[in-house]
Structure formats: structure tokens, C-alpha cells
Image: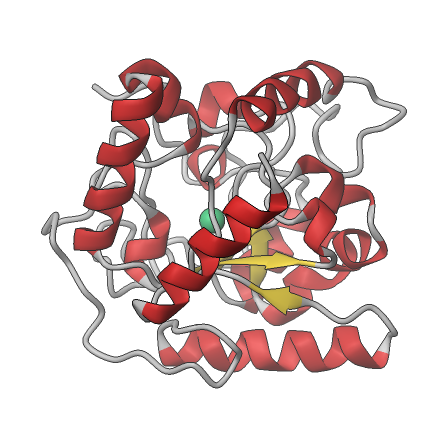
Length: 258
Ligand SMILES: [Zn+2]
């Protein structure tokens, strides 16, 4: 895609009060994503941990109350949304949002985002913020546009259907370090991406779509898409080397829409 067209689109969406950000692929983006997906299983280039480790299904840590938060309630920081777990109700919007962290999110997550960004800046790797909360109606528009351009099968690999996007919960945010690797797998290899992978859990964030977990999460590797789950769970997942929420909570994998 030409930078000009992307900039124009971003500017137009900014004017609408939304962040264009996530996934507006040109043909080049899609084929690049496919190439990266196949390269992603190379352990030498693998930037994220836990991928080569067999993931234990259930061995509950005595330290973490697995019932602390709901997995179903979209107001819960532990809500699990994927292709077989729609947001209920589909048109859910968080009752409260703030943008203190740099993008609209549920206040608890926004505060954590702000702290994380301050720490990253102190470490010399400033984190820019793309999309946080995204309304059902806008997701409906985006997804419809992708389907029209790419077809449903292809669109489903990089865009959530309305009612199935974590961004609609207000608990997810896309970050980036440089414009060149914004919404691209190369974010993982940038200093900002490496910092987030190493320190995100200290602020309650997990990488929601890790490398080589497409069969579980339904999405290719998105190192930029961070999900706030709270420090306790994020730390527990890291210590136990469990890459996905689905595996941590022994939920069914969701590679496809049901
Ligand atoms: Zn995202």
C-alpha cells in the first residue's frame, strides 16, 4: 500500500474520532503476514516465550484464585472473547472509558497502560498507542469492508466479526514502536516490542495472540495486540509458561467461528 493512502485513511478515521489502526491490509500486507506466519515457527527468530514449551492444561497454582473474576462477563478483566465466545451482549459497550493511558480503555486498563508507557519511556523505548476501545458499530463497518474486499475466509484471519473483538470490551490495545512495524510482526523484533514482551506482565498485560497459537486463538501472531488481565494473572501465565487464556482456563480452542 502506499503510505499516502494509509495516512489519508488514518486521518479520516481520526476525524471520526476513532483510531484507524488495526488491520487495513493491502494485498502486500496480507502476503507479508502469511510469510511471517510461516517464518514464525523458526525458533531462532521466535521473540516470544512459551511457544516451544508443551503447555500444561491444568495445574492450578495455589496462589491464584481461578474464580476471582468471570470469564463470561465483558466487564471482567478476565473475560475470554474469541471466535467461539462472543461478547454477551453482542453490542456491549463498557459503562466507563478513559483515555489517560493514551487510548480509550476501561479505566483500570487505561491506568495500567499509562504506567507501562511511562516505564517504557524511562527505559528509552517509547510505546505509541493505536486502537484501544472500538465500538461494535465501527467493527461492523470495518469487518464488512474487509469481507467486501477480501472475502469472508480471508477477513476472518485478521479481523474479528462485530461482537467478537477484544477491542469492543475496552480491555485491549494495540501498541507500536515505529510506523514501519505498526500492526506488523516485525514489532516483536523492535526494542519496543522486546520491552513489552519482557515487561508487559508487570503492568497486567499479556500478548493475546502469541506466535504459533493460531489453532487456539484463531488469529495469527499479533505481538502488538495487548490484553489487560491484571498483574496477578499476567504474571501467573508467564511463570507457568502458558501462552493463551484459552489454555490457562482450559477452554476449547477457537480456531474458527462456530
Ligand atoms: Zn488489536
